[in-house]
Amino acid sequence: MAKRLLSGMQPTGMLHLGNLEGALRNWVRLQDSYDSYFCIVDWHALTTVAEDPSNLKSLVREVALDFLAAGLDPAKCAIFVQSHVKQHAELHLLLSMITPLPWLERVPTYKEKRENLNIESASYGLLGYPVLQAADIMVYKAEAVPVGRDQLPHLELTREITRRFNFLFGPVFPECEALLTEAAVMPGTDGRKMSKSYGNAIYISDSADETAKKLKTMFTDPAKLRRGDPGHPEVCPVFALQQLYNKGETPWIEENCRSGALGCVDCKKKLTEALNENLAPIRERRQVFASDPALVEKALEQGAAKARETAEETMKEVRAAMKLG
Image (cartoon, rainbow, N blue to C red):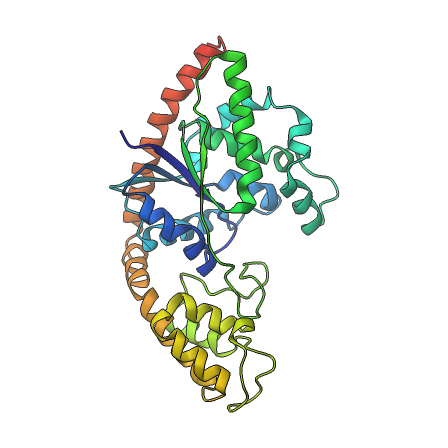
């Protein structure tokens, strides 16, 4: 029997190339070899948008479209919305009863979020975010979780909570293992890391024309001011994207950039052609699903039904182990 896998994304904004290359393409590969559950974690999103969740429903739909466009197949995996499976909340509540407060206060992202979002008085939801994340994983008895290195502290906390539960109530849960996703930092149009909050992202939902317009204004090597100037590809965000989307021409581009024979305008044109060609199948699939909302709803309902069935099996064991009900 295939090992079970769980991963998810917050619907806090449109998904961009960083999300595509850092997670989605990997998920598409993994769905063929794991019993896979991919979740749109709308409850997690409330830790930062609780005071104004007005766009949350539409963002959930956009993220679902991006999941399907990237190639996640409802016939191979469960694609669902976190809040459609109430067992996540039940297990979160029960796990919160056995998770020591200092475990949560030491999680690095708690302090980072408070500082980055200028939160003076943090909610329990923000502090307890890792417990809900643990419940997301444990309710499916997921053995594998694809994550980046920045998520490893959260995953280790899940393992600690698992060990504590099993010690107190018996061996109900397996300890999950990280499937480390190695992905280069995706540069945004301003040279910084691509991010929704920086306004420097190229989105999966962008059209070919919108992508071309963004790339036209993208930062390049600050020392290469005109054609003929020798370039330094190692510091150029455009070249970093060429290495991802135009590998066949990368050696030629590097050589001619360094010699000054290739100007930045022509370099961006090459990247635009390569990137739009790469994204064309994804855009076509996205348009198919966007033009038929019933297809998206069917995929999410089908995924939630499978997720609820699996999660309820786990919760029956949890309730029995904890002598509840």
